[in-house]
Amino acid sequence: MKRVRRTPILLLVGALLIAAIVYRNGDDTTSVSSRPAVAADDPGLPPPEARSASWFCAAGSSASGSSESGGEGAAETVVVTSVADTELSATVTVMPGGNAAPVSRTVRVGPHREARVAVADVLETPEPGVVVEIVGGQAAVAHELRSDSDIATEPCARRASRDWYFSSGTTVRGSEQTLVLFNPFGDDAIVDVAILTDAGVQEPDQLQGLGVERRSRVSLPIHELVPRQELVAIEVHARIGRVVAERSMSFDGTTPENGPARSGLALSLGAMSPRRTWEVPAGTTADGGTTHLVVANFGSVSSHVEVDVLIGDDQTLTPLSTTVPARGVVALDVGERVPAGERFAVRVFARTLEGDEPPVVAEMLSWWPDASASTSVATTLGSTRPARRWVVPLLDVDADATVTVINPGGSPLTAEVLAYDTDGSEPRSAPSAAIEAGKFATFSLEELGLGGARTIVVSSDRDVFVGLGLLGTAGGSWMAAVPDFGFGDRI
Image 1: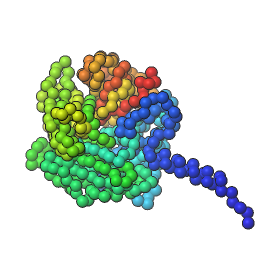
Image 2: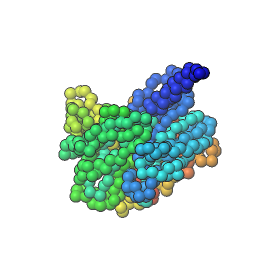
Image 3: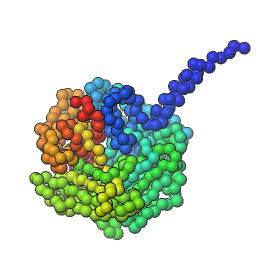
Image 4: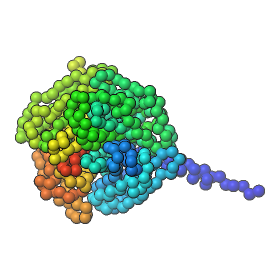
C-alpha cells in the first residue's frame, strides 16, 4: 500500500491554526514598528502597515419585528470611512448564531470615501453580530441605528474584552434598556453582569454564569430584570472568553413617576476599563436640550470627582464636585448653568481626598423634549486618550453636524478640519482654529459650508480630543470620533 506523506498536510493545518488564532484574538497582522504600543483598551485606527484589521459591531437589528435596539422598525447600517490614499476592501460578515452559517458581503471603498452596508441586505436575522474586516488601508468603522423618529450612531469595537462598563442607563417607566453581548470567536464565553443603581448593587440570577455561544450574540432586557430604577450602571465580566458589549436605550415619551418624559433612541459602546480622566467633546443647550453626566464607581473605595463644564467666549464656570460611593452611581446636571443655545464640553477628573485616584466611568446622557424641533435622546462615553488626528464618520441624515475639539494640554494649539465629499474630489477645509490650553472649539459643518461631506478628518499640532454632535429633524446623536494614535509619529 502506498504511504501518504503527512508533512504538507501538517504544514497546512498549522497555517490554518495560526490564522484561526489571529482571528480569534481579534488582533491586526502588522509589520514591526517603532511606534509606542497602544493599550488594548485604547481603541483607534489600525496602523497604516496593518495588512488587515477587524471591527466588531454588537447592537442592531436586521429582522423586521425585532424589539431590540429601539423598537420595531429600527435598522442597522454599517458605515466604513476610508482615510487611505488607495482603494481598500471591506468585508461585512453577519453571524446569526447557532448552527446557521455566517453570510458575508465585500465592498470596495475608494480613497477618502465612505461605504454604507445595510445589515439586512447581507442577512436578515433576529440577533445579528457583525464583523467588518478591512484590507488594503486605514479606515474607521461605525454603525447607525434608525427608528421612525430618531437616530443613534457609535464607532464599532476594535477589540473584544473580558470587561465592559456603562454608566448612564435608566429603566424608568417609558424606557427600554438592552445590553447586547457579541461573541465573534470560535469558543463559547461565560459572562457575569452586575447592575449598579442609586439604590444599591443588584446581580439577578439570570445574569450570572450567562452563556454566550461562539459566533453569536445575546440581547438582555435590563429594563425587565431591574425595573423602575432611575440610575443604572452596568459591569460586564467574562469568566471565560471575551465579548463585545453595547447598550441601546429607547424612550417612548411616557412620563415616569419622577423625571422628564423622553422620546428617542441612544446607543453606547462600553468602556473596557474605568479611567481617572474623561473628556467629552459634546454638549449643547440648543432646542431646549438637557444633559446629565452620570459617573459610576465600580471599585471598593469612594471616589471624589471634579467636573469642568467648558463654555465659549472665555467664560469660566466653577467646577462641579461630588463623591461617588464605592459600587455606586451619581448623576450631575451639567447643562443647567449653560446659557440657552450654547455649545459646551465636559472634562472629568477622579481622585480621593487622600490623594490616590480610583478610576470611574463617566457617560453623558442628553435629551430634547417633544416640543423641540429635534426630539431625541443621545449618549456618549467620550474619550480617555488624546491623539493628533481623528476620523469622524458622518451619517447621511437631515441634521446639523458639529465637530468639537478639546485642548487638554497646557499650551495653545491649532486644529484643522478637512471634509471629503462622496465624489472623491479634493478635500475642502475650514479655517484653522487656535485653541487655548484647557479650552475647546467647535466646527459647524453647515455654517462653514462643509455640508454634504461624508468623511471628516481633524488634525492638530498637539494632542486633542474630538467628538461629533448631530441635531436636527432626524433626531440627535453624540459620538466620540475615532483616533489615529500613530499619526504624530508619521509627520
